[in-house]
Image (cartoon, rainbow, N blue to C red; front, side, top):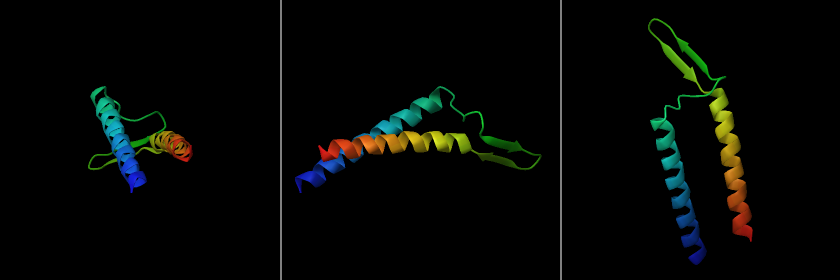
Length: 73
């Protein structure tokens, strides 16, 4: 049961860190990366963040790898 408590604390800390990161990026004007697809027509607006998704995937995979490595120690 103590391991489950540690896991919940770790997940909470990760959620807080992600929230602070997203809040900070929104305040500095982070609106996507070069390579994201943006189309604005007369009556439609489409935004598909391909490169942003790839970067976030790499960062989150690395973070989860580190968390997994720390949990096994």
